[in-house]
Length: 144
Image (cartoon, rainbow, N blue to C red; front, top):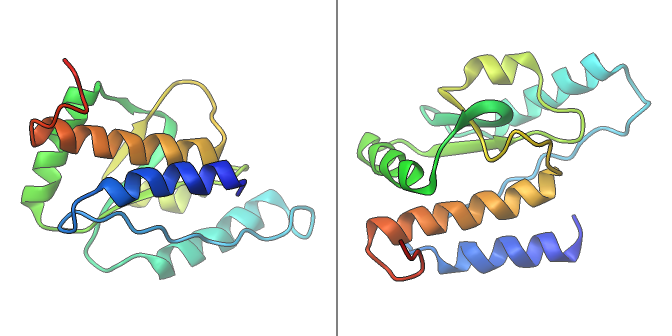
């Protein structure tokens, strides 16, 4: 990832309170062209599944997913926190995600109907989670 992705992501993860941390687990993609796209996505899906905690709540980031306002995301975040499970957000690579991962999802969420680079999605998602938490905690970061 470019330095601006790491910097932007770190900015928002450092702002999160200790009781609601954001942990990043990066799955190294196979080199393109070494296999067919289906094989690449399947192999990647196995690595994603191996990296996930057991009994987690899975949210797949996909342009065809539900779109929330930030207020709706805050309300949903409250529900996820009450659930007590780790919430795993899965952001696909340049070729997307294998159907096995999508079928495991408890929810599919879209930040936009636009196709966004996965590095940018990482930063936007971290910012929106921080913003949603600031709404819950009535912090002035989000001005209504």
